[in-house]
Image (cartoon, rainbow, N blue to C red; front, side, top):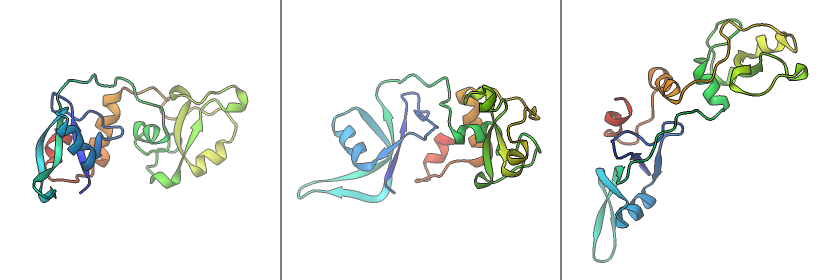
Amino acid sequence: MSDVLVLNADYRPLNFLPLSTISWQHAMKLDMLERIKPIEWYDEWQVRSAHDSWAVPAIVVTKEFQKYKKSVRFSRRAVYLRDLYTCQYCSEPFAQKDLTLDHVLPVCKGGKTEWTNIVTACKKCNHSKSDKIISPIRLPWKPEYWQIVAHIKDNHGFTFKHPSWERYLNS
């Protein structure tokens, strides 16, 4: 119960990758400075001083609108999400621990580590491919931010620290 969901002024999460949360202590400080507005609170959780008590927020909204990201930062998790945790050589879905990233054009042949040259591969396929040039089932591509968010919502969902979060994360 320590995280506070941060929403933009339009009541959508500031970020999904990673999810925009802050500690309850930071939320209380920003609230006192009037930089955010709490809209939901944790039930029966209050912070007390000698003379006062305050409810701890579960969801806060920024007072000023922040621009949304348009691009996705390249990361292992983002590639797995783009490829739906599926090996791009054998088309089988795998758990994250059983996956690797593979360079379509191997590094030893001039391949770079970038969106358009990296695919998800199971350990067996990656090992057998080695440094050969084999075309994956789906060619790698650079996803848009909202495509990755949609993959998360459709396939993995979010962890809700408070029941009220669901309304804002699954809309």
